[in-house]
Image (cartoon, rainbow, N blue to C red; front, side, top):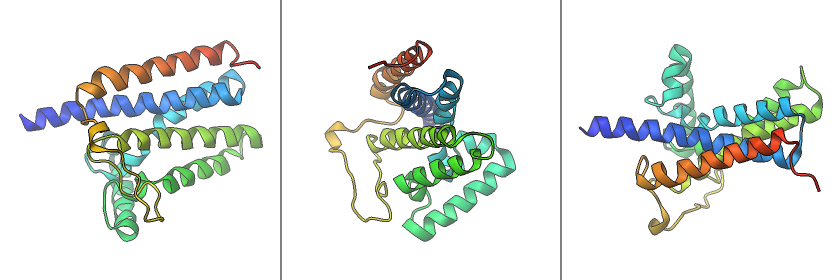
Length: 196
């Protein structure tokens, strides 16, 4: 029975990560105001990027979805995380530095096909998606100990404000709010964003 509960929690967490990333990407688009196609691409990339921190966990859905590539990537990330933070999961991949590396990397890669501002926007969307997932993990009971790595400063949320992964608050409060935030942001993007 514990396995079924854990499986349900993973499904809920995946949905929440996706919507947190998508909401971050949508509102980044509203703030920056790129062309609609680029903005919607940013929303999709931010939603996908929200899965990136969990690429260090062998049971994570994105690791399994990527098959042998996911397996190899997971092992590499776990080894690097152990070498840098001394933990395999919720270590290096759960840091703002990891989000920055992914965002800058995406910017540099997409420069081959896009203008500088478009590449920077998509890199920013990936950064925003990862950060949204990290903030979501920060408020769970497990918290994050390496958010500011390599700094040893630990950002912590009081236990009374933390939520259980896959629990009632995540399912009936956080997930619906992120869904509404995502669609509200996408609606504004399609209407041309916020004009001063």
